[in-house]
Length: 424
Image 1: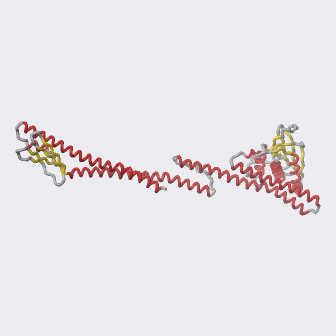
Image 2: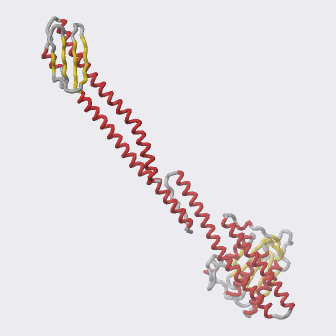
Image 3: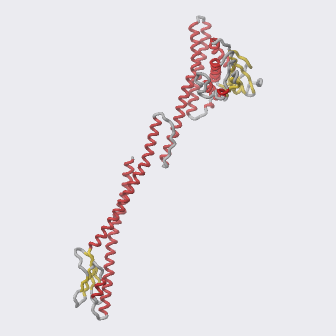
């Protein structure tokens, strides 16, 4: 491209120089020759006037005066009828310019000049035009090289940016080149880089969230299957299989919810636009208690349910179950003693609290407990952050109400048709 720009610019300049320079050379040559002839005519006119004045007075031409009027290196001859021809100056050799003028007494004055001097002036003038043309071509070449570099460098830079995007480095460069078309391309590439960055972030977040969110349900499902393998009681097998089936359904819901949230985030839309339905809080709590009771019992701890029964909230059953599972896992891993799930109604919200009798959350950790990758012990630090996102997706919120003993609370919008309960 750089070579094409240079060749195109030089081609245009050469055409312009040819179109202007060749006619200028002809005009200049004609002007020099015309000037030379005019000078000869003027000198011949002066000589003729001098001769006529002497002849009119009846006197002989003054040769000394005439000789002084002839400018070297011109050559002049004066012919008067009945008298010898007068000659002044050196007769030119070779080709010459000649101008002849006649007077009233029959006299003739001829002034000559060698063509060599005129040719020399023409040559010098043409040489000057050629030098100017060469300077113009040189300046155009320098300008073409500069312009080619100015245009080629941004294109090379943009190509490197595109290659960098293709190799997985989506950082926008925010470079502009003072060329509207190139700046537009750079702007589009930066926008594409930002979109790719959001998509990569969403994909990484999906992988991290999925690995964390699926770990606990898969563990619980594995425990149920082990119970089925270990027992020979058909009733127990049926009960455990039903629980396992509900866990599979919740796993499907979790995966679908994670994918939906990722697609919305990658498209730049608010994931909180997800639809929610009315859900009986007691059913979700009971399902989680049944799911977690074996794990709690194996840790020689107790899980109990308290509070106001029969509450109905606006939420997604799978999301609410996942939030409660995260809080129960957190209490089982980091807490101690009895784990209590308490439900209550406050104002227009339904609140589900999870409390244990452990040492609680430190003051430093309490302010950042819902941040990603923040954990008080050897854990991923994703559970509470993902649980908060799930709660907010249904228009609710997840809060830490008390540090010691720790009390986490899920606030959900109460079903409008439900009668108001007690405020807490």
